[in-house]
Amino acid sequence: MLIKKSESGKIENSKDCTVWEYQYPSELFSFATALIDGRYPDSGSVTNTQCEEIYYAVSGSGVVHSEFGDFELGKGDLYYFKKGEKYWVEGKNLFLVLVNAPKWTPEQHKRVE
Image (tube, rainbow, N blue to C red):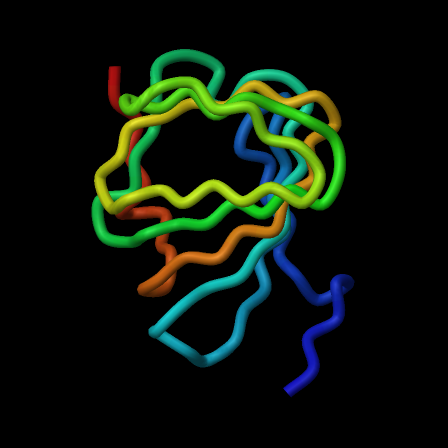
């Protein structure tokens, strides 16, 4: 099954974060790309209550601010988020590959303060 970028769903998570979600019939994992140029989320933190997540940096740079510390992210780096980990991200033209297991859903992605 081929899924072209033109077929991906573009989601504006905030003024500083755009995600392209690739849809396919698996419940085991999901795949997306994202561009963060600024802060995501705009305030507070977010967490995934049902899935683990991987950020792989294709280009740009950023900092993951997690409940476990602050981690610089650059081209070729990978950050693994545990299920329930609270975080926010600062990016400077940070282009990411996102992989989630099980499949990511908006209902399980929560804002937390």
